[in-house]
Image 1 (tube, rainbow, N blue to C red):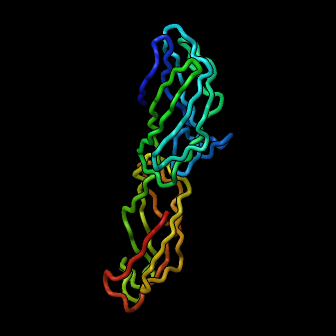
Image 2 (cartoon, rainbow, N blue to C red; image 1 turned 135 degrees about the vertical axis):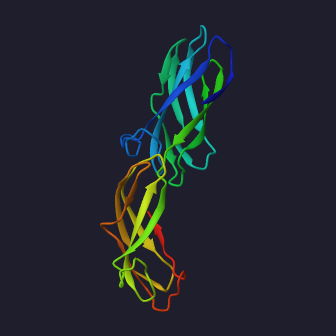
Image 3 (cartoon, one colour; image 1 turned 180 degrees about the horizontal axis):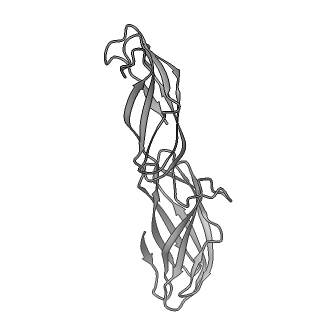
Length: 231
């Protein structure tokens, strides 16, 4: 958080914190962990305090904006009412922010909160909204049930593929499924879906119970075929 203050010491509005709501009530849509995650719609509630010495801030209002590529503000205005010296206030209704599905893990989205009151004073505060995301990496690839049972998919063979995925992000992922795809004419995928279950942050899982099934053309040479997976 940061701020630039314009006004006198008798009245001064400070940003003391903010909360995130993603509980699927009101305008929010998320997993209910009270963190901003990719593809969620959150309700954002900044808390304001009048740290001035003697003057009530009248009809305080806030305007939220951002040029950050990973957020879209859909409700940008909020009212705080009057705030007496030493008192704090939340808005009567929260701001609403959409988080991009492409937002990376441990990213701080920059938001700007401009605050005004009818006494003619104004303040600008910066909110750095942490975004927590899952980050799945393929650790190992193994072949089983191939035609000669040597653990290698060779020319003309069919077999099953097992992947081990590690969640290197800070957000748990639930009921993870992956789709195996290829543009290679030498590979035929006969079962493209693998289930990995829940993968907590820092943990690994594999699709042992639901392996991918594929076959390799008899004309394929070593190292000539490729596939890709999408979770």
